[in-house]
Length: 476
Image (tube, rainbow, N blue to C red; front, side):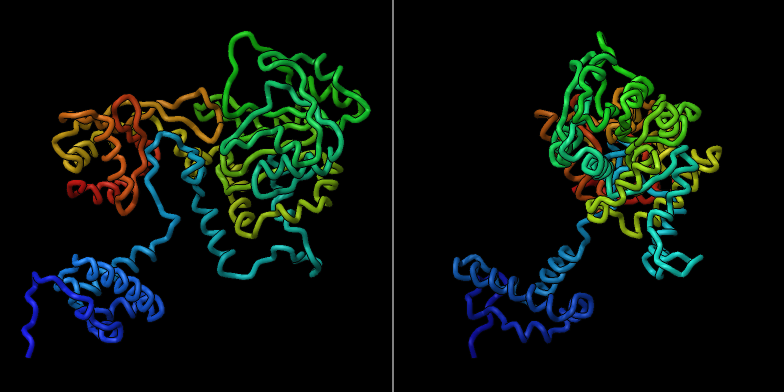
């Protein structure tokens, strides 16, 4: 009988156990019950192929072929592959409406409504009064009109889609007059002129980057003009020697020539934010009252709802927009409507908004409420990062995000981590930032001024214990 190789000996290809034997091993029973035979067989084949290559190269050790070791390796690979790609994270960037982290968080009422829509049939396009086919816009039309003062409303999948649809329906092969200072670019190099071109409309720029006058609009109007359009500069600000034309002035010029005045309001808000101690932002109602015939805005920014593009305004224009074939291509699903309706419903009681609407609750958290949280978590984080880092609880500034009020900041509090060991701090801070991203619930902060900043504005009290628990052990 041949001598059994020692644990530390090098394995040959012939030592690799066959797939069937491994499949029948007790060590793989849990993986089979969890992931199923199809995935386990595929993972085993990949693992055995890799083992053969290493054996041929003389780098495979005999102990790596034991069934429990193979099972642990295969199970770990399957568990990793089974993890969802869309994962919960802690947003400690200081940007509340972070585009890369999903923007607005939905309130409980919206979450419950979405869950119900996911698990039960619903009257998405069914009129319960007549028993006939309905219009899915009917679910939110009255609410939007009540909250904005508009005559009619419709909804598509985001604000860029709303602008595209509006331009294609009302200005295809015609001219749209826009101030040069309002030709914005939003995230991902998405530009108003590009949307205009795709919609089939011809852009007519007026004024200059920093100054546009009412006469600039007036002299640009011609026989091919379809509308005068204003674009809210929500993701930047021009200061100094500037001049812009108000919505009311543009609307008056448009109406005098029998043209509609349209406004891309961008973030869009339904209430006066100053009552909550936030900077002033024009509301949709104020824009309608100033004379705008159509207003487009986002659902998942200041509104605090799901991703959506909302169009409100004159009934005749909304009817024309809804007849455009693009409307069906850009329409929202029942899940968006299920989330949007209860969010809009919260605005009927604005006195409760700062408690019930998640986005507004996070934006209005006072610094004095966040400071004790930072001080309580300082020692936990210091233990986790180790002696080569100094952790301080410090005041800092948050921002609203997603292009809303870009120059305004919110006093906040958080943790600043600085490297105190030898060597360049940047490399060590990058490594620490990556370690935090690899936690079970990734922690997303920001590096600036030779420090890693963790703004605790978006860490609510109910999440604090779980956040601290994953920092109980030193980071690897």
